[in-house]
Amino acid sequence: MPWDGVDVRPITEAELAPWWEVRLRGLREHPEAFGADATSAQAEGPGFLVASTFGPSAGVNALFGAFAPDGEIVATTGVLGNRGKRAHIAVIWGVYVVPEARRRGLASRLIGAAIAHCREFPHILQIHIDVTADNTAALHLYTAAGFVPWGREPRAIALPGRFYDEIHLALMLDGDAEGPPPGNR
Image (cartoon, rainbow, N blue to C red; front, side, top):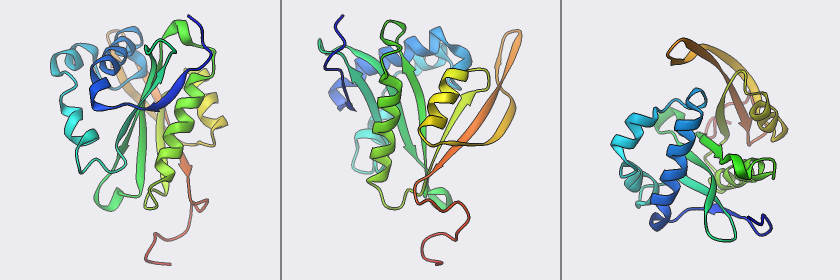
């Protein structure tokens, strides 16, 4: 497959089904990398994402895909906004690139698109992302994008016979990790 002209952008509601298939593939192939479980996700289906991502109250919530020139989705991620006292924080989740499309900078482009999307919302002051502690490639990708580790959660993912720690990272969009929230300045 030629890799020139890969388009990274938010998906439309009409593209949810193929996006979901790539998401399920990631959950099956790398269960240690995601908090979601492939079997449960398959049973649930993507319908729960429709109202929160494509509805009038979607806000910062979005799903992104990397589209090969033939239209196939080869990489995915999502952005989820928080509510209430945590409404200033967005979370990037579910980063996955199909094996045949790796080492082409698609994950970096997805992260860049997700960050740019978050910057469109003035109330979003920071973005969080998590990574399995032994996934050094993803950890390097996230720190290269400006994320800073702030904690390690032991045994965050439990699979048969093994636990996986997660590293929590944050990117401060306002450049002020210590100042008071908007309205209190």
